[in-house]
Image (cartoon, rainbow, N blue to C red; front, side, top):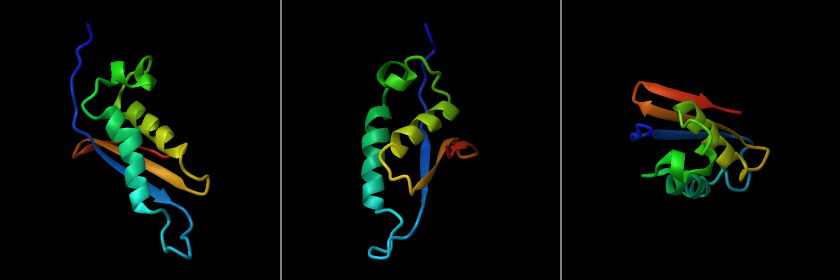
Length: 100
């Protein structure tokens, strides 16, 4: 049997794009927060990624692969005008970043 174990990750999502002249925002941070909650926190938090998250049924949930999956889950909901960069910290000194 696999040796399952848990992690407490820190996630940073950076969004770049044009500033909307009406709102002054690149993206409404409430919209981004809700998207992260729906696409990352709810499906991943306190879950066995191998068993509970479809992307990891055949993909090893390394920090690198988790970062790519999070990127894909967020990117599909955002306009092509936005570029995103996802950084996942496994410890305060160890992180991976993916930007497509």
